[in-house]
Amino acid sequence: MISELKLNNFRCFETSSIKLSPGINFFYGPNGSGKTSILEAIYMCSSGKSFKSSNIKSLISFDQDYFNISAYDSSKGYTLNLVKGRTSPILIKINNTKSTTSALIKEFPATAIHNNTFSFANASPDFRRKILDRSLFVSNPNFSETWFGFYRSLKQRNSSLKKGLIDNIDAWNQKVSEEGEALDLNRIAFFKESLSELKSIFIKLKPSVITDKLNKVSIEFFSGWDKNNKLCELLAQNQNKDLFSKTTTQGPHKADIKISIKGIDAKQILSRGEQKILSILWCCSQNEVLRKKYNIDATLIIDDIKSELDNSTFEVFLNLLNFLDNQVIFSCIDDHFSSKINPNYKDFKKFHVEQLR
Image (cartoon, rainbow, N blue to C red; front, side, top):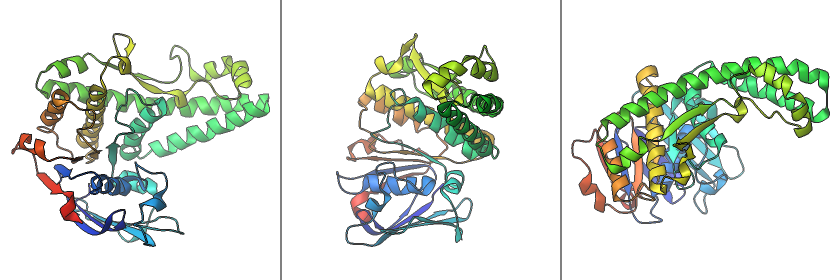
């Protein structure tokens, strides 16, 4: 986890140095003060990407030629340096050695919840898969090979489908199914562990109308095909359909986490605030698996925590903070609610963003 962050020419920050708590970190200040920028920089340390903009060059301060983000993980003794110039690709160094974005994910794992992705229930299946897979990339050293192996084979099968190469399709069916079923087993195992942790979190939460409602939510993993059939058999059965569609219609690339209440899609029943708090709880459950089983400290980043949350759903979040052991970093416009912060929260730190510039 990041314990110290230094910014240079990053958005509205000419220079800034921030020492983070290993527990709860709260940033507050008016709109435009730089709250989101700090959270964005922390997420950059985990991904090399912004959760707000696809154009990394736009993160460079106006009239400057580059930005520099430096970070330190005191638990590992690791240093990180990210430099992006206007005309050069991003340079990543871990312990002064040139590195890659895939290394960032493993060494500085973090998940961000922001205004564009606050509802997992309303997100795309691809987004929910990525949240699950991200934890697997971090925790399982063999998962990267399994994941890339499957998607390479899938790409070849789809290419053969588009060209109508029947013999090639038959050959790729076996490869796609072998790698696909291995990928599926990894996902199922981590999903089950996360679901178990989610149930444990609900037991710890103070009972309320909101928690009672959320506890009735059904969360199920869908592998992407009918598990009554082996994937290889299904690929063969669907060959004509896939040839017509020119793509593979079933498999792990169609996997999803189904969220429902009594068989009805949860996004049709839950309020936006309830969807957001459920997303937070699910991220916490995955982080708990990483911490307990793999001894990995992952960070949860929540931009504008009060957005979408009414008083009752916000109380659930405050209650959650009582027993979280992972690093949590969140922001809010106002400081008026900090009086509700429990003084016994683990390693709580509060930052007025305007004083950091």
